[in-house]
Image 1 (cartoon, rainbow, N blue to C red):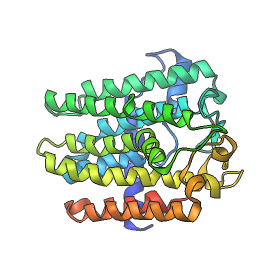
Image 2: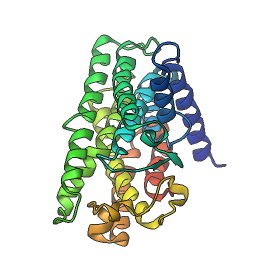
Image 3: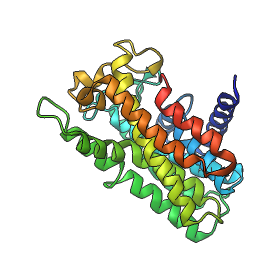
Image 4: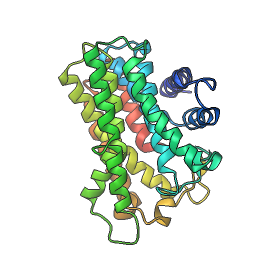
Length: 301
């Protein structure tokens, strides 16, 4: 295991602990709802967004303990979006992270409620978590950042545009598809980088600009790679943890479909290079952030 893999493992384990500590116990809420929330949140996933929180936060000077709450909040928001996106009314997926999706393991109503509860818990975590010792002004900026990333100007808006572009009608052009991806996937990735910076009181607008430029490139590259993996994984999914070929079956607009796999890979690599140019000025964590950008485009899951 090399240094990057070791660091990723450490961040993933820390994220798992941070989530487990903040998810409500079964005695505090209805048991089935709590089980579904833990099912969606724990026991798998790349934890890419949480790793961005930790790496960008440490780059800005925040201690790891300061970053547990925003890392958990980002992963709660991401888990909520997966539980809802997998529903029959949305992407209609029955496999996620190598196991049945939440609505299959429980039921549709429970999956909706689990997603709702995780989204609100993310904001509760940012607003009141005692481990996050930042000023009230910083907490408000964190809440604003996550709210914008999850709402109509972010994930929800991107999902709406994605659904409009799904079906047998004409495909959007590449510029419109880039907008969909930047909202649906990229908004939360950019928010993760910003939340890490906001956990450090000394972080300034110049650093936020660098982190945002890096994360914007990585976020779009990440979704383009998802498009490619859906094609290359095949029906069984392999390491992907879900069925491959779903985009084509649903007639979804993707970079792989519009440009072809090889041109889509080239676009992802170009975005990775844009991100790498930014890491040169990001100090001690530049090597990890550079490798994280490379992971975004070279991964198999």
